[in-house]
Image 1 (spheres, rainbow, N blue to C red):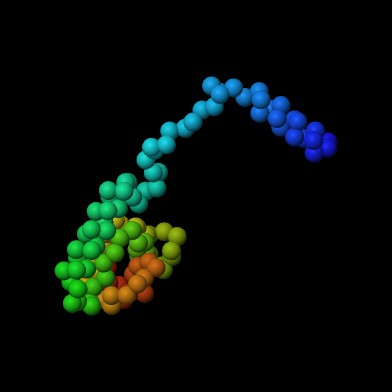
Image 2: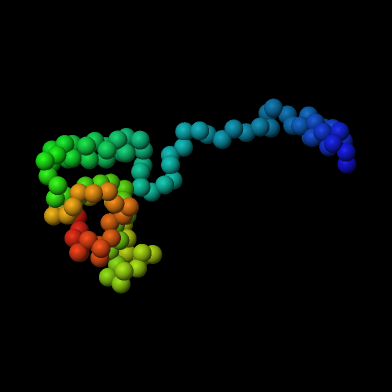
Amino acid sequence: MTPSQSSDATTEKTAQIEPEEIIIPPWDLWSDEPPLESDRHRDQIELLLACLKWWWRERTDFYATGNLTIYFSPDHITTRDFRRPDFFVVLGVENRPRKSWVLWAEQGKHSV
């Protein structure tokens, strides 16, 4: 098939589609992802974190975050025994960025 024949075949197929056959799916669907239900939910988490961090701005002995995985398997297994809460606070720890909360790496300290 030559390029012009291919182009003709594509045009022929396109011409056969009627406008009423095109179905546009709904655009205002809720997310299927479990951590956040809506923009408002995320905004509430961010507001809670901002208020707490401002209130405790002089403290360095706490960690507060949201939507971060907490691993708590007694066997140090990361494929089970984990949760991802909307929000959590741990007292008596260094306030530094973390990729996740790994209970056995944090001397067993967990959220209050």
